[in-house]
Amino acid sequence: MNRLLRAYRCRDLAAARSELSRWFTQPLGQAWHTQEQRLLSELLDAYFGYHLLQVGRPQGEGLCSASRIPHRIVLVDELSPGSLAGESVLLARGEQLPLESGSVDVVVLPHTLPFAEQPHTLLREVERVLIPEGRVIILGFNPWSLFGLRRLLLGWRGQAPWCGHFYSGFRVRDWLSLLGFDSQGQQHYFYRPPLSRHGLLQRLAFLERWGARLWPILGGGYVLVARKRVTTLTPIRPRWRSRRLINVGPVEPTARRERS
Image (cartoon, rainbow, N blue to C red; front, side, top):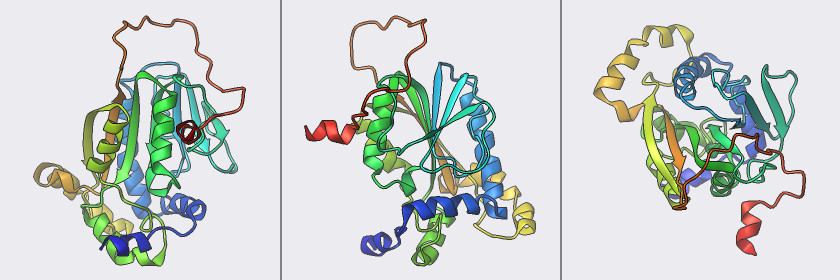
């Protein structure tokens, strides 16, 4: 089974990320995005700080517009037409974030891990740039759901999102724990089957209410929140001046520091 799932991996991850953006313009992707935006807006409303980083924008629009954090950055690996109101666009790779260590208050990963070339390196970079007690919010596809079943059936076609690696929330929490994060909660969403017709999705909307009550862990997606653990015993004094964000010198990615 593991060998079969590995064969389902997207052959061209850059092309898969573009295809995922097109999927979000279709009826199923639009219905998914509506729920995702609502959940993320509720979470972000509780967080404050100077800088917010969103790695990737498969939905084609800013997911973090509800955030109270004034400076919001969207990192992309290629520029596309249009701009995001109230947000800065940074062209870079998630595995090599050109940001100062300990400079970002909140990082949002909207389905970034399933289509990342090096997901572990990406998470290490997230840990590096976050301030102590900074938050990371991860949106993912749940492999133990009808969406995971459809991936088993259609992943061989190499189409996004079905060719992406659907990491379970338990697995991602385990990775984060090893990096020094404390899990602050996980919530599943989207209990309708992965159908393409808008009318059917509308008629099956009642499954969202029943699914959340009767089989909550079987939702097609999950949102996971973790906090960067403070390892020092020295009390942290608030820093009222603005932090430097962009690294003006050569960026030293986490992977390079580990090899030295």
